[in-house]
Length: 293
Image 1 (cartoon, rainbow, N blue to C red):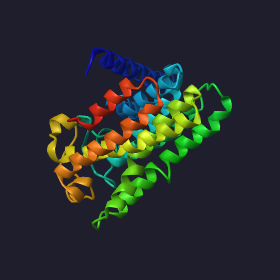
Image 2: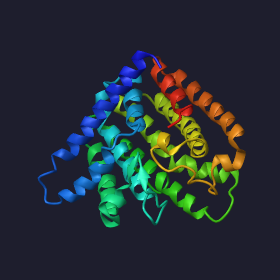
Image 3: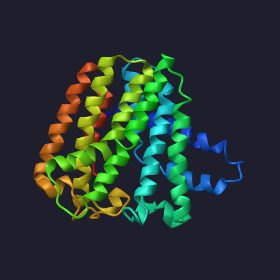
């Protein structure tokens, strides 16, 4: 990647790291500090910060000051982190490692891990509601986007479908139904909320949603591939955990999955034609769908 791409990525990541740290730092005097310790253990553990970066960049591409998207970017990352904490629990995926460290419940216990996830989900809406929008009336739409993408029709719904699928082999459409909700929904929220933060047009909102849907598919298929071809050192978590699960690799095999990744990436890139300055997002899309981590 070129230096300009790397510099912007680092700027976005540094900004959201500081924003998230400051959000909870002001609460440290409260008596429930063990809760904040558990929250920050997972929330501030690094990671790609993909979703905040997308919110920032779509805001910028729509002509806004990208920092105005920070409340939405933080909210999405809070929801994403809560989902990881709960996903790792013994009653769910029962994982011991996340991002190269013991999972939250391994450090703080199952009860505190559940409560940390609950806090992050709820606090996400407090963060989102603090945004200052070019059109204040868009706040209701923004909260609706976040709620739908995170809830029963989005990520939680996808997780439910995933659980219900464990005892049988799924069709292609059933796997797509899971992944467009479980993974794709929060990517869609990030892109659309970035447009809203900038006061973007309906055409830009639609293009951002279509981009997100296609990229989310490419991202998830690549993730399924990495569970087979990646290593624990590269991934920062256990690999091979999805063997026997209803993944795209199980449906199509690795070679066909590579073709699907390229197909959906191309669809996503075509949707970026709506935006006049999309070079960074194009580079980001390519990096995500060819990644090794």
